[in-house]
Image 1 (tube, rainbow, N blue to C red):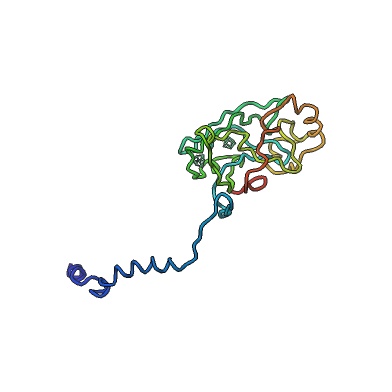
Image 2 (cartoon, helix red, strand yellow):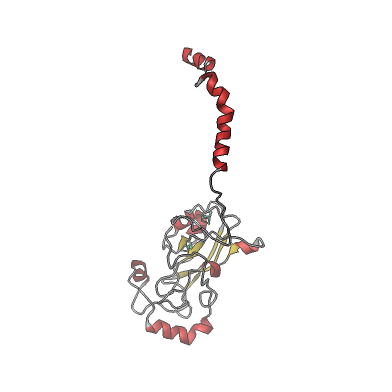
Length: 221
Ligand code: SF4
Ligand code: SF4
């Protein structure tokens, strides 16, 4: 109690520091006046963010081009902002988008709601969903900020062929999860050449081919 009363009577630093306090505040201002001005010329010059920056999402593919998303909706349930909408559907032998039974037929992320918390990518059981470094998320309309599956799908890299197409012959979805499939094989390429146009699908021609600084393939969270 006595200490508190003493402190109130004699504030730290005494009358001298009280006298110079306003000048010390302006000292920060004066110091900044003589430092170089740093103005980022965005969007003409884009400054790369830190490697683990969480930006636009990406729906990843396996090395043969099949999609990793199985339409389970766990990402949508994990999202605190209700920003994700998923509709799953069954793969068929005539139209297969992912290994296993199901794939994500409809996939939307509403970037007007997303707070980039990353909970959705933590929830994803197949590492289908990750986040890129792309921070250019602007649009001229509200609907333009709802990104559809074709906007979110990762690019087709070397060795991939666009889904739908069959799995690598003799493999199961477990082989895909274990990473034993490393690229599309000739049977898959032949199937796509024969059926590609009839099968169509969002992966075929409309998938995003470049996404600014979006990294290749699967992107670390
Ligand atoms: S980053 Fe967070 S807010 Fe954005 S879609 Fe994922 S869970 Fe939802
Ligand atoms: S992105 Fe992952 S969590 Fe979301 S529906 Fe696809 S597989 Fe499931």
